[in-house]
Length: 455
Image (cartoon, rainbow, N blue to C red; front, side, top):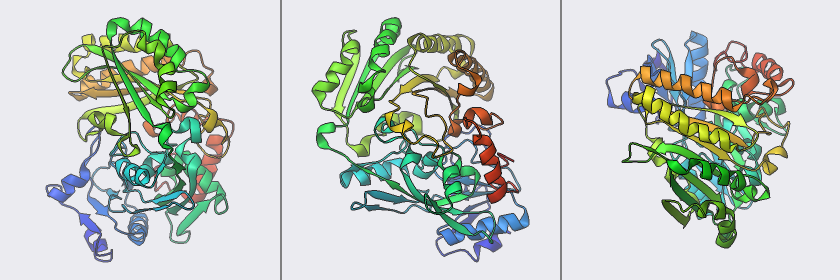
């Protein structure tokens, strides 16, 4: 059936049905091999009309589908009998410098758009990794270095084009003026309502005197208590609006033992940045790297974690503010995994913080509902085998429980793009949020074409 459908798609579209072919294998490439399955067919639409034809035929024939763009979602996989709709060929974008907007298709990855907006004199809320789809990132909320200044990526969304599950609804435009309720839903839960084939979002002028200045420091693990105490100062206050950052426990490349990496991005002159970094400088870091970072190179530091393949996952939980004592526990977690689950010693654990000034101004305007969370504790679990992976994930979840032990149940947050399952109230918090999403799911996707979430 997929091959027959291919005959009515545009000339640039592709249909792959041979799992041994080079093209099939290339399209199957994902950030993680966890739960990797082989579909009956992979379809690569080249136009929005192709997407419509594929979706409508799948619905008509009751063929389950999943959507793939950058290949970073652990859920962009499906077993025999299902189709993967690979959007990588939808890779066009355009910049409107007069209106300060970018129009982007789902095949556009972070590095590509960052370079383009930089050359035009702008910056944009984009993924922290070079190979992540800008659209996929945005649909789950979109947390970036610009949170404190401009809010989440969804807060900069102007409009989107959405291919719905049924021909009678067709492809719709949603914005603050059209299909407003769907617009609210896709800003944080967008992957569950249709195929977003294009977004238009705001971009922002980038002033040369505001950097961004990247400042990274490496500390030995024996300085954990001092570093955690210094981070209590660095990660809080008005200064964080223009100086977000992260702290990570990991074994540096070439080393068997863990170290501590602290990295801040400063949107301010260097002399101001140095004052903020003073509590850390006083600890005499083992190494530091300080440089003005062109926007097109914002993802470079994450390249070592961006490669496809391997047994790995990314999980996270929200926190109100940075807690040095809890960060110290991440070193204990690394040491415990090193001792008890050596097959997962390649894992790393970080906390990233940002100001809520830009985030809180958009309260209630989207399905993204974690506007009180100024810190995300993120665990990158990387293992040699599935047993080690599962054991490390279990220890990771125990750590998250500890991190959120002082929060009320209504305050416990999970980052939507990092989790699935039935924890709706933790991924989509707030009075009535899940209820509203369920109502909209019944309206736009009552048969669960785009997953059964909310049904």
